Length: 62
Image (cartoon, rainbow, N blue to C red; front, side):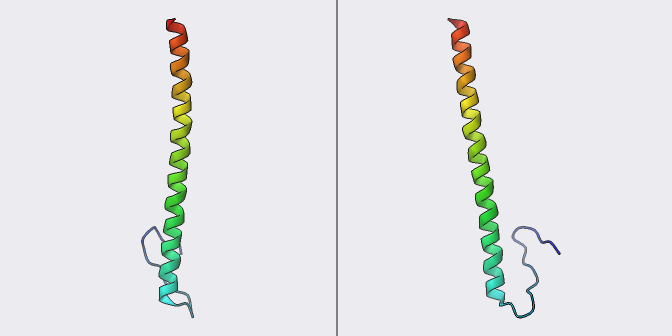
């Protein structure tokens, strides 16, 4: 059964509750870092696109 971010899940048979909490925390950290990396790539890409657009506009104005 899937569970959302920050929501505890049911522990499996023989699984320590602390290790389950650590696994949930690590999953949240991995998801958050993937989101941040994706956002950074998008920002970098759009900065390049804006820079190219500004250079083209400056060339047209001249």
